[in-house]
Image (cartoon, rainbow, N blue to C red; front, top):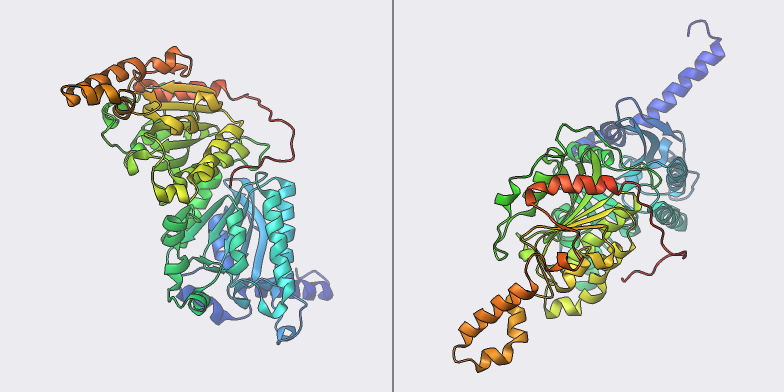
Length: 521
């Protein structure tokens, strides 16, 4: 450096000073305030997300050119958003992070244009996009230009949908139209006591309805994780949240033209799953936890559940079988007996569509007594909203394997990736009961007259239940008619699934040419 001409040296020092100012922000006290809230700065968050030293920032010296309301005298570098790319486990990932220290992370014209450029780069490069959200919405001082900036983000979110994985991490407030961008992405992470999302905040709610509600009660992390279903993952702090984002990325392909990354495993493919015999009672009326079943089947018992706090009657999870990523959809008998309802159908439909978009084979574990009956369900649209899951499965072209563990009744059996809607391999345990409905209910309908006319109606009812079960609900009825490819020993479930997915690895299925389908909404 000492040998460089003085003019060059001065310019290099000036460049270093400017970049350091862009990194540190214009107000050191703003950093202290951010830390006092238990929140990290944009660069600190990016450092936790990406591999050490891999981040390449773009447009760090960008400044807005707006005027009015004092903006012309306040033109900090970055304009309140840090953009660039790096790697996670050596694979390229694009990221942008709102900097709450600058304009409260509010989006203005220059801020938005930086995000637009990064999103275009991510789509062109075929790499995942992660947004670290901590902003106050549109920058009011810039008026309609800020709103137009959001519109372009929404358009690019939609353009990237099904092309590259998009992950939103909510690390602060997200109000108004800004909340729609995370809603358009594949996964949303939230952090307790920090994340807040709502279209209209508590003040507006009070002004319009007279109702008083806190920010967290209206749109806090647990509300969106367990009530609205907007958030897929919820965490107690930022480091654990960002660590799980890294884990999720390790299970996803970079784009829709690639397969998910495989990983070596020491868990034998032919390992017998003896514990399944203890975990799942043969009596269909007894409950059990499907999480334990998934844990027994997958590599090393390791899986990542999606939407764990919402619609607990169905479980969606990413895991590996034989080192290869698969998506599990499984009824949960421990919650509402595993029935399908509106929330469960929408949760599973979204997950099936994601797996299909990104070449992730689907494993469906079936133990479903039917759809949840009730006036509320019917009036809230169980027909059209339940049909979302049916549409998602019928439209999926990835390898699909189903296993009927116990009950598979009525329309819910069809919807849970049955042979008739295109599953590639349909397996069942010897405890399966595939039927229009349970033997008890069916006997009451089919043999109603005989039961009512009998001298001992209860004895006649038991007799007819046994007859119906022996005739139509025995475990080999579906297999005899080709609706099940094989009835397997539960201890062979893991090896059977691995063999089936391996056989289907080169599956090629084409849908009819069309602009797009029109799924039920």
